[in-house]
Every structure is written in C-alpha cells, then in structure tokens.
Length: 492
Image (tube, rainbow, N blue to C red; front, side, top):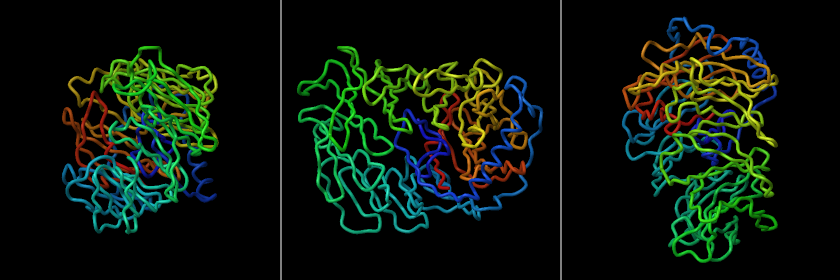
C-alpha cells in the first residue's frame, strides 16, 4: 500500500502504505500556496453537505465536455509506461501538455522520479526527464534521497556519471536521509541472508547475526530503525519455529523481537510499513502462500516497535489504504476481490486502532480508489466510485469522481458533476495537485480484462474539466481494479 497525501513524486501514486512502504516525498510549498490550498479545500469541505452515497447530488448530470486540452498553469510532469508501445516510457509536461518519448523500447515497471525530478528510473534503467542517453541496468534502480546515486543489484552508480562501484551484497533499500543503504550480503540465499548497513565512506556494519535467515521488511521514516523478517528456511542455521519480526535501532544496534508467529507456522510476511511517527509497524502474513490472496483481502495488524501487544486493524484488499492526516484510511472489503460489490471507506489509527466508518459498505455506490488532501478543516478524499454490481464480465465499473471529508461528523460523499464520464467509460486513479486545486485522473475505456486510458485534469475551484491531455496506453483490469498506479507517476 502507499502514501497518498498526496503521493510522492517518485512513485506510483495510488499503491497503499501497508503493502508498499518504499515511498518518500520531497516537496516545497510556500506559505501563500499553502494558504490558497487550505482555502480551496475548505471550500470543498463546505460543498460536501449531508448527502449520502445512496442519494448523491449530481448523479443525473450529463457528461460535460472538456473546454481545453491543457491546464492554464504548471502542475508538474507525468511519466507513464506504455503509451505508444507496451514497453515505452513517455512524459507529458503539464506546462504545455506535450508528450515526449524518452525510451521507445525496453521500459517496464513503475516510473520513479529522482528527488529533484531531473531523472526517471524504470525497470531496465534510468534517463533524464529532459531526454538523452538511456542508462541500462539489470532491474529497476533506486535513487538516493539526495539524488546523487542510483543503486541496483550489486551496483552503485553516480547519476551524473563516473565510476560504478561493486557492492558487497545486493541492494535492498536506501535510508531516508543521506546516502546510507541496506545490503543483503549472502547471494547464495537469494534475499534471505545477513543484512548490512553501508555508509557513505563505504564502511559497513552488520545488522543481523551471523547465520540468520533474514530479509528487510521496512525502514522507519526518520531512518533510525529498521524491521527485519527472520524465519525458517531450508538449510538455515538455527531458524525459529515460526516467522519473526525484529526491530533494530541503527544507533545502538539493539535488536528487539516485536512479533512471533505461532510455532510451526510457515507464513511469508507481506512487506510492512511504519506509521508516520515511526512508533508502529503495520504488517500482514500469508499462511497459504498464495500469490494472489491480497486481492481477496487479508487481515492486517499493528505492533509497537517496542514490542507491545499486537492490534488487529481490518481485512484490507490489495493496496486500498493510505495515511491521511495521521490516520490510516482504507477501503472496507465488502465483496472480496470484486471491487464493485459495495465497498465503503473507513479510518483507524493509534493507539487503539478502532475503526470509524466514513462511507458505509453495502450501499448502492462502491468506492475503490482514493487520494487524500490535508486541510485545516480535516482531510478531504477524492474517490473513484461507481454503482455496486458484480461487474461480470469485467469492464462495467462506470466510476466517476467523488469528494468526501474525513472529519468526524461529516456525512456522505458528493459526486463531482463536472467530471462525469461518457456512457461506458470509467474514471480511475484520482490524484491531487500539490496546491489542492486540481485533480488528475485517468478516463478509461474498458475492454474486458484491460482498458485504454487518457489523462484528464479537473480544476476544482472553477469546476472546469481539461483534456484529454495525453493518451497513456493500456493497462490490465483485475476484478474491477485497473493497473494505472503501477504504470504512472506524477512529479509535482
């Protein structure tokens, strides 16, 4: 799962925080822009009156034609995979809405911008956002937080060019600050050996004990703590009976057991994530070892990194969650892997982790994706919602954009009449601009198990639809979930 408040520029914008914790953002915003954004969002909250999702305002509105093909202000750059070809990397600069092909062949994965937005990584290499030579790699490189280096496999390379360094192990993750990184040091165990911390000078420190069968689970937002998985492995020395999670203080190197599976349970962990304050780890596990069980929904848990009691959160499906104003917002899993079976929205958070319903499940409207915009009056959600149905065969989602407040006592959601798609279309992946005035989204034309999409923008302050800005190619459709988030990133 991912951070959507709004999502970081260097990654896909709608994967949730729980299942995918490799997301950080660096953003500058002046006081004037922040004040303007707060006023805009406050106005949106005022418009979200006591209208329930079962009787939404504007549901009878006709589709409004876009009045322009480009926003009238700079909103950043969008990178996407698969526009002209399934393995091309393209960008569209929202200053002039010109599409540019950076890599014509051999690009895959999720585009990831460098912290300053000057480079874009993909599965197979990286390239300057302005174009030019393509630097090919094995796998997808990851930019250091200062943007000076990329790491991939057992290599470390300066972005600006220079000597490529052979690492003593396989790259796992950067720490959030500086250029320290975590390595897996035993290639024979394939991402299950001892872990080391490598600092800028090249010096390393062991994070786990010799002989441990270990993999990295999560890195705290402040870079002071990591959590590792320790589990039974054939050929391993002295493994635990069940899987374990250990927190490691990187200053003192103190290791603390924070969670242990029942004896003899062999259940892989899903990648965990820390709460924004770094006090809690959120995680889940897969007792059946099924590759697609997240689509059905699995229980997620929260545990203090000090090793206190574990709290059950909820059954969460796929990447349907996001940190929002210090709380975890998630989609209520009402119908299993079908995301059109009346799913609602709920919120929870530390220390009790009790859930509060924002939009009820089992209503006539089912919500599948959302993005969060903080405001002085409480966070506002932009949601993709459509009629509840079995969606069989795939391609009848008919979603449009909605707004809802996370503020306690707020009632219902409001459909945005200015952005109702044409009949047979569906609007997916809402994304907030940095100033909170605009929404970007993908207007999708379903084709069974896939869909073809175009990028649109919505000026919320003037109820103005802009687009199509760019054709972004095709993506898959799995039980009503489109894959745009894994193919597209927005640098604001």
